[in-house]
Length: 66
Image (tube, rainbow, N blue to C red; front, side):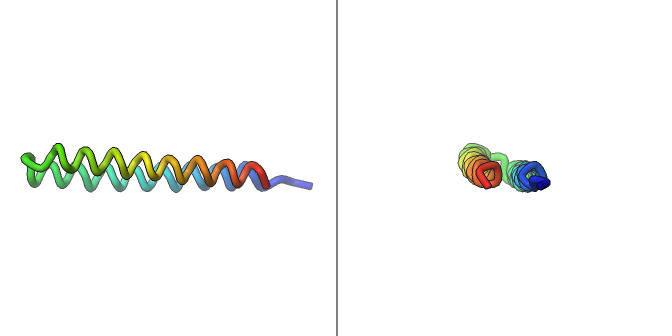
């Protein structure tokens, strides 16, 4: 029987990379528009990226356990 776990894990990684890329793009645009808000934007970006990574790790573990 062929396992689909590697495909699921790859989809999780692609989704996480896409999400973090969109997050970084939006943060850079926000900082470019309002440089004085950079510390707040950076903090929010780091927290959001950590949450995305956490969900991606959890999903990868679930996929590999199936």
